[in-house]
Image 1 (tube, one colour):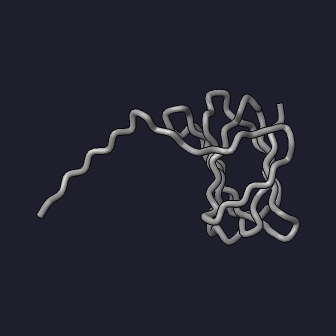
Image 2 (spheres, rainbow, N blue to C red; image 1 turned 30 degrees about the vertical axis):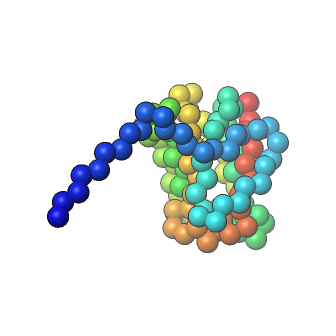
Length: 111
């Protein structure tokens, strides 16, 4: 028996956190964060002092086309990245495991 599925994405909506000038703590059990740049030109990402992560940050345009990817195989606990001008969404996760985000992350926008 075969099945055919059709997905209508005309009214698509991605739940995101709004970047702000204040450092904001985010905690998600699945370790994947979607951020709206909210007009900022840079994003600062930090983990708690006890955590380190292997950055995997993807910048998307409004149609979820990938603009650029920042991927590191070196553990850090803070990172400052330029946000591309056409960026509408930022996905932040760990390159290897969500366990590196068990205490959440801190994000901040910089004009």
